[in-house]
Image 1 (cartoon, rainbow, N blue to C red):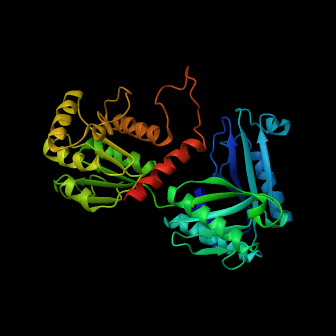
Image 2 (image 1 turned 90 degrees about the vertical axis):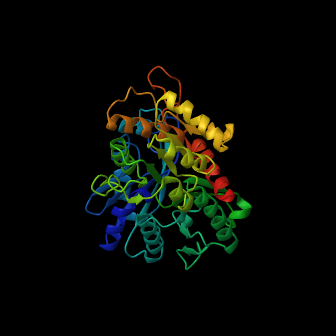
Image 3 (image 1 turned 120 degrees about the vertical axis):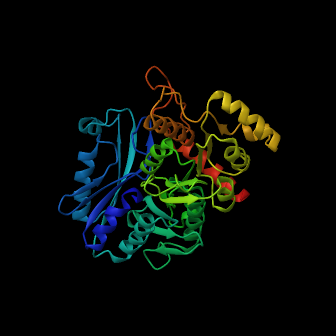
Length: 393
């Protein structure tokens, strides 16, 4: 749901009633991951998507029903479901979708969602936990948890069920928030304090990950546009003021005129940060990469020919870089697409970053037997790596 926070915030501000359908769980070749959402208001306006088109029509009608009866429901669509096949889910996947009405008169729950949506829209860190399976009276109930442990629920700071349940959920939500992920959480009958097991969906809102592009060259301009398109907060850094200008990089969020390694020493990075070194000049590259390869970031790539790569590695060894650190370096940067233009090279670099982030192989899907859509296991692996790196920092 947080992926359409901007639009939903506007609906809340205008006092609209609406229903949100959120993907809770997927298996097989489902096109959208948990957290993806479709929302419908009373006028029939639709925003977002839960399946890339497969079951949108059926979910649209379920949202209209939820707006009328005020009831939260959990629905499953899959290739074994005749009704789902009839509406178009033929991609071989199974998706569970939570449909939640958000009506003006339901003030308590509406305020929790409003806080979560505001956090997501403004880039604040917060985790929203919602009950997706359990007693009917608890379905859809939400708890918002901040990084400092503050809670906001439909009944003050609580779910309204039991304080111990709230504590368990808050602790789990914080763990997901630290990893920056979205996942389901199972709570057994004993811990739920309501006589039956509960399933919750935890959605994390975190600031946009950083992409730092070093080297104010024409290839950098294309990569900055690509980084912004992928949702990164993009910084361009170069020591040469004549090239490092907002006019040359209008899509950058930040322009920094400074020696690259000095800037990297003082700026904040984390386990989602990607560093793209396009300077291919030893006086910039060596001190910058020597530092970058020791930082807990997601990706370090450097531009240059294969000969440049070998010479640069020797200089890095002389500077004290270890073989383990050098193994982290993606150089020459990007996937082999035969790219020539700055725009094509930017696609090549972006493709490698996405493959690394999602656990992709980078090989053509046609003729291969790799999964088309990586599931929550891949995301969890990357999330746990982020948590470990944050602990290291």
